[in-house]
Image 1 (tube, rainbow, N blue to C red):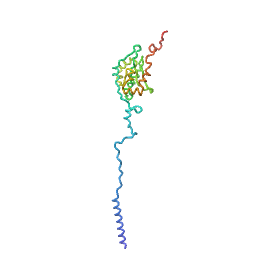
Image 2: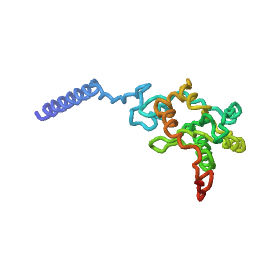
Image 3: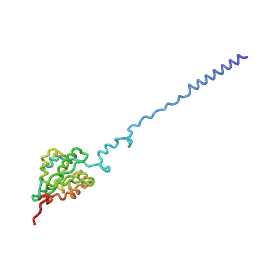
Image 4: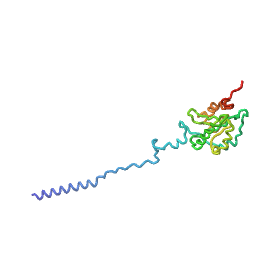
Length: 215
């Protein structure tokens, strides 16, 4: 009697094992997670460094694009300039205006400031350094014809590339985009008109500090 029972238990166990094996073979394997490929031509975020580097180079204050900047070598400007001076005072009939090079043009701007420093030390008729309210140098108004000859002696100054004008009227009427921008945004012509005053030498400078005029 025990043998048939044992045989029945073995058969049941075998049937259960076969059913489990069959189920494991037919059940699908768990799906593998597929990592999403990076999107092509993805634009960098605004926080990425250097994203605005190019735009900053071509945009000026308040996001405005700067106009074309095409300076000319000072030696070429001087060669074409024929000074008209008043024999009575030694002053030019109209100031010879040298516009300060753009600050982004570091080499020319540095030479210009060095020239401007020497300019202020010239005796006699004054040459005026024109500045804005921030004390940035906008231009030099040369009223002294002797300084023009000094420029011809300073070869390094002749290499400065910038804009020059034979008179304030010529600067005001310029069609150059950069000068129009300077007149509009920096009030260049207006500042020259306001600041280029009292350039003639004072009486004490002509006669001497202790000189007295006879009654």
